[in-house]
Image (tube, rainbow, N blue to C red; front, side, top):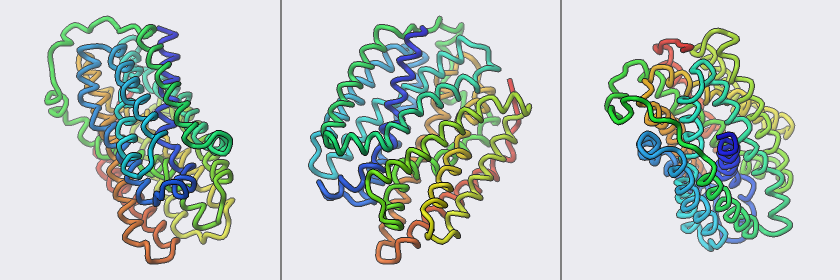
Length: 390
């Protein structure tokens, strides 16, 4: 199982890469096949939406089939196949299809590891293990920054994606041979999604889950690139360096959040406080004049660090889910988290398109304001949640 978990972590590195690499390639894709920022926002949103749409069938498959087949088959077909299609793309529409496929391929990876953690480790360690997997896997976020910019310069973006297609296929085959399915939980054949939806405890958590990851995920996944290009004229390599800083901050934030629930004795107020600071950071991005690239990158790094409470919210919701519904429970939470990014990323693209005739600064202010308003609504609802460390 240890080798299997290592390969699941490597697969999650790929997942983190694929959700974030478009920001670095925004300029070269514009030059080569004519993509606009709103085109890439739509493609990025499709990745998140296909990923989210797969969470319910993935949850069923984890409970019924197990993580070995679920993760290996989908990563091979979707991840490797989608990356290969991206490498051959000549139009924005083909990029859309490729990102849809890649989202499907990445959809089971993190939840397969969470499923194993939930059934084979003490519940009190779940948040720490979940954050560790998320933090180490987020190295993909770093690879999708400056290293990707260098690779695009050296072998082209097509060669880079072709290499990733091969790597995805190799990792998928490794998962098939090394991941061991946990022993079945008694009663695991009973229960359904409707049993989860009957639990009042999770309903105050799901709205925040929907909006929590969107500001950091959408900005790191796309908007940081066009923003730094439009506002400061940064090159692809310079954007890669800036995204490297934000990606590193997201990793440090994830690893910091992980053990804090046990240290502070609360999940609810840790999550609430961190996300309230995300709102404050977004407000700074709105009101700060775009005259300092250092300040802008620093604020993006703060956004990445503070917006990394995703695994703690998962752990909060997981604490109310019975063992025989763990697979469907954690994937339901993930559906809201990743689906929220997809919906809000596509909406942010529409905001950008609507304000295309105005000054660039106004467009980005509107996008950041949209993210902040959504997060405030999620936090208000989250106030009615019940705290838990079980």
